[in-house]
Image (cartoon, rainbow, N blue to C red; front, side, top):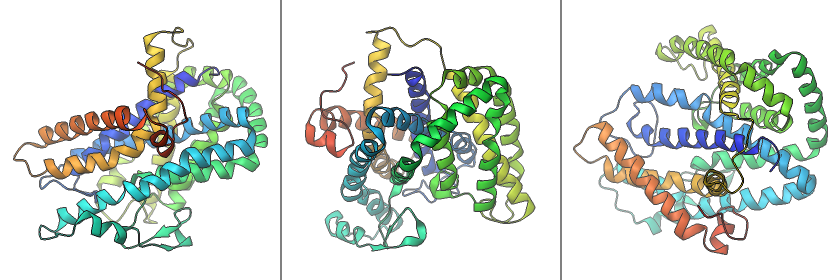
Length: 386
């Protein structure tokens, strides 16, 4: 493990936790078209979800870029491409066939109390697809088919394959940038400008956690080029507080555009909508820089310590837990929304119940056998014990 990887792993798990806790909240959102909706909703969910989406998925893509740097260094570009096709492509295929039909089937049942089609009759209709190149890199489309939460895996696999021919040049460019940042740390803010432009001009996409899909490519490439350098890490730590404050100001400035209710701020070309999307893109970069700097620590956990074993366990679990989480959350939500209970009680029940089931599935149905490890994107061998 090269310097800084453990610290970035902490950041990735903060991101996963924020995103996983915001997914059940969509059950109670008045705006989002989630699979299962509670009869009572609240605008508070929209605000809380905004606090997560501005940084959580961008952070995951940035940390994935760091992982790509490490993998290419070990395997070379061709070996990296083969490894990513196995570790991302196989769980993507498996989950699309075996897991993703469940949320869509439950959506049909939740929307129509008279819907009585069995899951096994719905399953082949979910898989009735055709090729559609207009939504690249999402190449398959159908009346019921969807990638669901696996859009992250589709984009990440695409970005990894796009990276391969440019990996060496981008790594060399990162060295020059790191040297420049040593003299002028404020240069770390420059990616905020293209991110603002991408979101403003290409539009924000609700299906991809509010960001434009190609904005994530910039986060991924930034992680690949910059994050594996002690000079960058030092600059991140120095800038964390002031850049975090700037990010809060920029994010607060998006509130009038998002809350006004006039038109669609995600896609409209009005001056207000363009400015709102640009501010959101810049705020996202500032939040990611600030969180990286605040969570980074110069020292790694002590060798053999319980903390180190825990993070090793969680690092191995990241892909399986991500693949498993949404079908389980939707299933719990389907059973909970009918309760006569306050929103807070239902939310806690969905989060707690689904978390227990997801961890149990990972521990007892995934990590202990070679076939299930392979299908969920894990390498062969025994996982770290906690």
